[in-house]
Image (tube, rainbow, N blue to C red; front, side, top):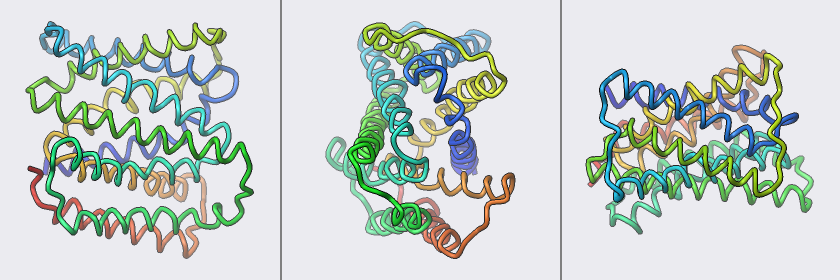
Amino acid sequence: MINFLLYIATVLIWGSTWYAIVFQIGVVDPGVSLAYRYAIAAALAFAWCYVCKKSLRFDWRAHRYFMLLGLFLFGLNYLSAYHAQIYISSALNAIGFSAMVWMNIINARLFFGTAIAVRTYVGASLGMLGILTIFWPSVQELSFSDTVFLGASLSVLGALIASFGNMVSQSAQRRKLPVMQANAWGMLYGALLNFGLAILQGKTFNFDPTAAYVGSLLFLAIFGSVVAFGCYLTLLGRVGLERAGYASVMVPVVALCLSALLEGLRLEPNILAGMALAIGGNLLILAYGGRAR
């Protein structure tokens, strides 16, 4: 039951962040927005640890993991995803990032020698097929150009970097490093990385005071970062990389459901068929998947 709640919280929150990210692109440079986001998220995570009397003192070996989390999970992966959204639609970005479900399976095998059940491969295939089915009209209308290729490459690169971050978190949890404290330090390192990159690139540290920008920034920092990553990485430690990674497939499905409820999106046959495939793969991986080694 705990795993189910962690999973539901992760996909519901990240499914809603698709809309929030759109409001982050425009006036403020994406890298600068990410720096703001993770500076706020780190401050909140440290405050939570302080209030709950969680120790924040770790040796240098632990901080190596925290730095890698900042690099892969709270830095370069989102930087790639944010910049990808400049060149391609959110639909194509969703397809690229959902590839993380396969990347987690492959990397878990390479890095940890995890034995993967056949049903996991089948479930992952169904999930990717479902995402492609959902967004097939957008793919058909795609005019392949240099900018589209760049955006798609950035999206897949972001998914690969995020998968490496999953490997780091799995390794850290095997060494009994607590998730919330690791996230607090990782988000701090991620914020410093994004600030540093923005300074090196000569970016302007401006701010958009509109309600849309500020509201989306706070939502992404509080729920999209502190809460969702806390749930997801805890789930990852409990059920394994290959099963937790299926969240990347369900996130765009949840985003479409929210769009249908809130924006009147018509659920065309391809959307319904894709959702059925994605949910079927989800059941194979999560409901009946074997315990991770």
